[in-house]
Amino acid sequence: MRIAIVHKDRCHARKCGTECILYCPRVRTGDETVVIGPDGKALISEELCVGCGICIKKCPFDAIDIVSLPEELEHPTHRYGRNGFALYGLPIPVEGKVTGILGANGIGKSTAIKILSGQLRPNLGNFDTEVAWDEILRQYTGTELFDYLQTVSKKTLKIASKPQYIDYIPKVFSGTVRTLLKTTDERDALAGILPALKLDALLDHEISALSGGELQRVAIAACLAREADLYFLDEITPFLDIYQRISAAKLIRDLAASRPVVIVEHDLAILDMLADTVHVGYGKPAVFGIITRPKGVRVGINQYLEGYLAEENVRFRDTQVVFEKRAHEKGSDREDLFIIPPMSKQYDTFRLEVTGGTVRTGEVLGVVGANGMGKSTFAKLLAGDETPTTGTIETSLRISYKPQYIKADTSDSVEMFLRRCTTKFDSSLYQHEIIDALSLTPILQSPVDSLSGGELQRVTIAGCLSRDADLYILDEPSAHLDVEQRVRVTRMIKHHAEGREAGIMVIDHDIYLIDMISERILVFEGEPGIAGTAAGPFRMREGMNRFLAVLDVTFRRDQSGRPRINKPGSFLDREQKGLGEFYYYVQDEN
Image (tube, rainbow, N blue to C red; front, side, top):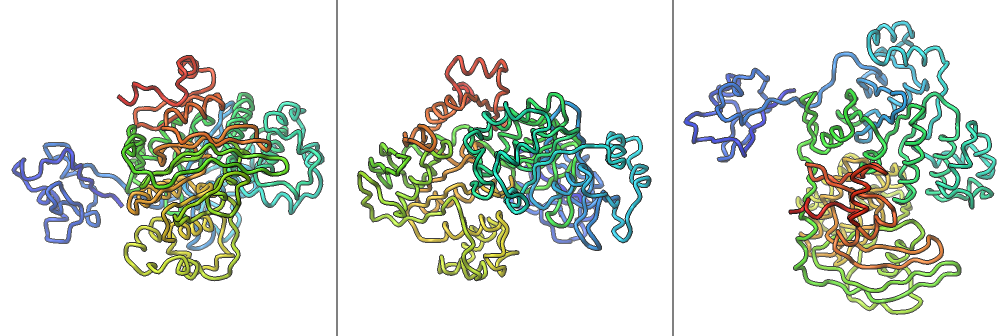
């Protein structure tokens, strides 16, 4: 479907002496119109527009564009049965480069990887019988994928893959980390990989006893240690802190200098640092997905955030993600809501020190730091789930807490779970701000214990924000969510804080999410697993400079306002480190 878009900032309706509605032969018949001009009058119908181009040529102010909405193409790459999911297009691996795939869950990224790795033969839409490789190759004759698919068809291509769902690894392998990695070290590369991922201390641990972050690092090491013609990594960041994400990214960049690498990733900062090119996946999740041709990483991510693919002339999202350069300063006049008291928590092998601070009304306070620094312990102390060793927390504030590790401990439906959290479930406001914002309608009648990781995360966030509270604490809300879902959660949390004049504390490792959502940040420093200190809260520049200096990574902002990681050792990286500006330039805000 093609639609007409009227740009309100360029439209001079009623001033140019013409009626836009008269330009379109399909609309002037009196049918209902839905595109609204700057004066509030309906102009051109999205339902009726066929892209004839008459309105564009007639408009003297270039205020009208014709764009396409996502729709299925003619020749699918693969289809899962009659009326099943269809994939159109494939990413193109490139020698010596990292190729990224960016898109929502259910859009076909994992299917594309299965095809390129030889696990799944594309059926070209013919799901009744197996399609011969000769027919598949004829379809791709003359394309950049022909030689690659020919190698896949001959089964001479050796693939190393890191799966998306690492929790299956203990189910298929029993033994120690050392035993598993020894069987995968085909390049004799573990000597460099183990210290980079801090796995030396885990070598004698049983695979079944590893945490999510430890298992993720082992899976990455196992994949990178193999000798292969092509490396596929499906989501490397879940369960890893920002330090571990940067370390893994550097290892992958080093490997990509000599081997093609394809990666699927939802952390845009890491994808930006890692990838040389990206393919954007769009369409309708679980219905059809389209993989675009390769784009430069900057262009591809910016177009994805904007929701509009210029080369394809397709708008796949109604709203764009905007990084406001001055958004971090707007809460400076807020009133204090809660005073964080100085306190400490002592365990057998770990000690947390909290120096104190404040949370303000209507503020979102970001919390950053490595794993094992006590961030989750801090959240539990505030929520009353833990008792401080020294200091006391005395508050009459109502606190709603979403923990880092969530469990589906009920077989009730999602709707019943949420009704226990709030009495406002049936109100239109709740339906709009919680149910619609988190796309929960399709799973409302599903049992909570049957949900996937991403679905359970969204339901748990909804439960936390549904409760009447003065302070909301969300520990890693981005885990298991794709980029689209992270954007919606970010927008919803900011709106929730300001609408209720509540304070919201967000602990997360996604730097983009922290940058978009936070007005100030709390920085956790120290030695992971031994001692941690909560410093701040700081204004964003001061806190991020303090945080990124330890990480030894610099950020800049591009023309869209999006923060980007500078390539290590680049001119900008060296220049900003010399100035002590790890976050972004002061003059960028002026």
